[in-house]
Image (cartoon, rainbow, N blue to C red; front, side, top):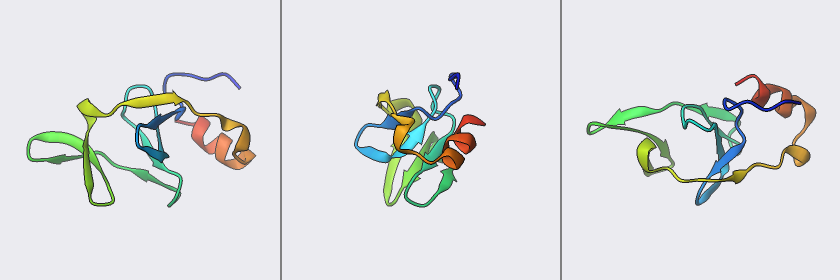
Length: 81
């Protein structure tokens, strides 16, 4: 499998269950199995994680996610983005 910069291979620092792509444009919550849409709140764009607001410009990415523990269906789904 060849990875591109649009693959969800990164996790957000402090939130291991949220995966994102290199440009911070697509977010996926592993706990709920849903994609997270970025929204505008008070003039800044970001995402809501529970009751916490994460501004897109201040999100810190962690190391590349190890896909070896994911099911084949989830790998196929995440490789589409």
